[in-house]
Length: 209
Image 1 (cartoon, rainbow, N blue to C red):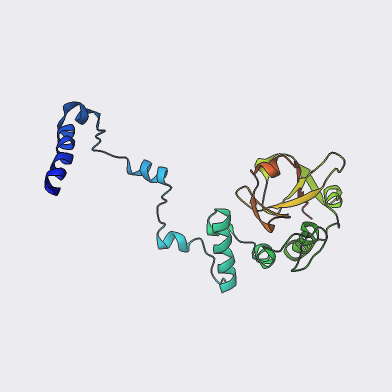
Image 2 (tube, rainbow, N blue to C red; image 1 turned 30 degrees about the vertical axis):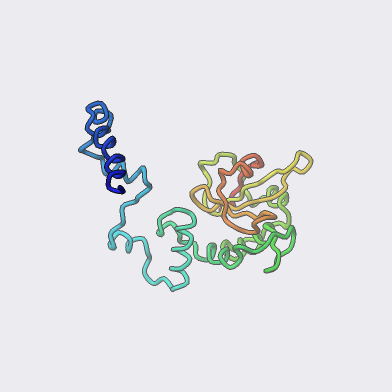
């Protein structure tokens, strides 16, 4: 009985598959563009060992290699683009710290006091104690063009019309910025996010001595 039922179910399917109209509607392609398929699926070609090795300087410490690899992945760039180890190493020690407006501790962190410590460590530069103070600093060159942004530039944010500059973020690479939010604390964000785009006011860069 079971065999009879199975035969009844399969028979219409065989007939349908043998139908010329059904066959004509089946997409048939014998040649495929492998490169296009990989691109569509987001598959990247693996780099050779020699090419990957070229992206690492000689004499790096284990910690520098860890920072290089972590932030090249986090920012979506080649390892050889991560070279400022004082900069990224200091950021890494504080990443994930909860938000705190003006505080600077492992329990809560404000971006301005953090930026003061970061720029003192990585660039040997003292900064003002407020976002507006950094914006007005004679040591900061202001600009608007996003295509000119470089690692270490300031992103000045304005939350309401009554406060000229409300907060800052720090540009890293590849449209990624370092910022603090009440929900996430200190972490890397996408600068293209609507939250930052709607609050973006200007950019600033430390002037060369």
